[in-house]
Length: 265
Image (cartoon, rainbow, N blue to C red; front, side, top):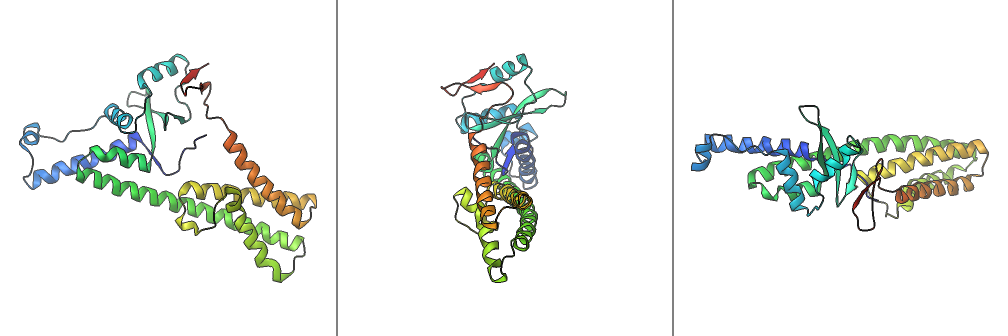
């Protein structure tokens, strides 16, 4: 199953940024008298339409889905306004246009968005990539802040566990370190500085730390031995990841057959 990345941008947002910097580039060229004859004759920058951007995304990322047929099938089944779903290498979702109609849009990873920009001018591409890098950084910072909160709550639960189990003071640091490593063990990752992790990994670690906190508290209520509580936490973390991995990427009656084609029930 594919998961929607935290570090992503939808095609409408990408369109806004492309047009913003297309207009900026045009005005700068106009001010410096470096417009081409064709640009001067036109008298304005070329505004990219969303349907053309979707076509570019499909071509650049080699996406085979026929959006028109797909949209018609969804309308027939009254399945517009669905949760984002992964189809042919990209997430598909919807938005409401200025006439309040549901329209298809793509949700791209930051890397996919950068790839699509290869067709833009050097100036526009550079400015939009600068925006994407800033967006990526802000998303990571936000997830890191959420993770810090989750880590504090988990630490409080561990502190309660130490008191509950009458753990000797000289072993406190060992307990904190052991539980701190547990999310990384469950994910099969080496423990690294969290500031260097992508937003998706930070989100997973945050969720696992929440699971650890809850499992510790529940286990103490049950009166389990501290050593058994660690095993319960480990089991809960691995179980949670297995549930996510075994989930089927479907959305309200939409599935795919063995040939990776859409099937509407």
